[in-house]
Length: 253
Length: 281
Image (cartoon, rainbow over all chains, first blue to last red; front, side, top):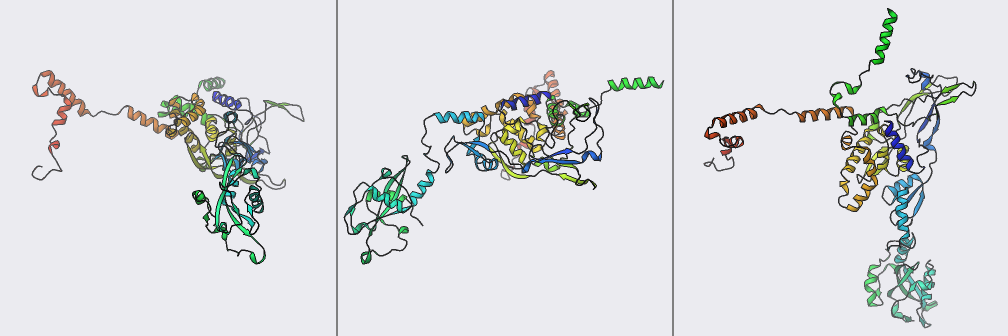
């Protein structure tokens, strides 16, 4: 079986220096009393009880294993795009990426295969960032309350939207906001119980519709009464052409 | 006289060859393909797992400067029955003693591998398997870039368990048939076949057929093959044929029809119709 062993060794050495250091993930033992030497080509002498006394050299199960590299074979939300190389703990890589088929081993063939993909123009299923899905989810769940004056005349402009976003915890530049088709002017209390949507472009790539409602603000006795959980209640669309889109955006429960 | 006897004995011992298991009984008819697998499984020495073998052929004694040969005698391992139901990656149970204190008697101890149940994914079989493994198995799979590569690259003596050998056989059969499990996606089928086809070069179809069989299974297979090869033919068929030929030779009219037709038409049972009406039957 010499031929087979050499064949296997040659097959292994053709794969770059991975298995040069053999893995021994177990108890590595050493005889305390060495066995006496035997004749060349002869049988080893009979083993006595003392030859079975072992010292533990190392228990490799408790040794920290090095990270392994994997290549994502598809877009993974919050992790990366197809072809990205990840450096992960072996257990995590095996359990969370390799077994579900989200990633492949970073073998030379796979590196070659996914590198070729990298040079090609980005296809549509690549996203601008791994966190895009999360951002889209957050924005589409938001009911943006735009606070406007009840007495001073105003025209709704992108900077109003930016300010309202900032109040609810989002930093949205003005160029990323696409206003509704018709200009909205106020104060107009008929706008109070209506809703419309604006379109926000994330990283100049992904578009998401955000539900907006106008609130007329005033202080003192002119203040409008507080409505309990108003963000959960459905409202009428301000523009009839937006009604279908607004139906699609889920309301917070 | 005594010295002559001794010389004869010495001479005989040189020429006498002990019978191996392949020389006795039906086993002598086992094909070369199975002998190859047997050598790979039982004769080839497994890789050192539980000890660190010393490198080189010779070493010099530090104290005396004496040159001594290096003889790596492997640590004897115990193979429990459960090893065949998991993939232990060459690990096994070590039975021995611990000397915990210089002043105390040695204590018996078993070093048992830490076993875990996890999932392995076989690309050729296009399936996931839940198996008992050790950390070493997972590391070997990772080092070989996949479960199929690990099984196909590792010789049988290092796989040890019957489960691994059976899986390897199954994988080789699938590969030989061109991955029929990917028939729904011809492109993927081609990709998988291209990736693994290099392994097929080291086996012939007959070797794959005889791969991964235990001694008993191989003997049963051989016996079945032999039985199928020389199945007894009923004598009545032969006699009937002979008779018909004789009758033909004699030129009797009723024997002009072929012997098969005669056997078909003569049965009175064929005239019976068990599902017909009473008066018809």
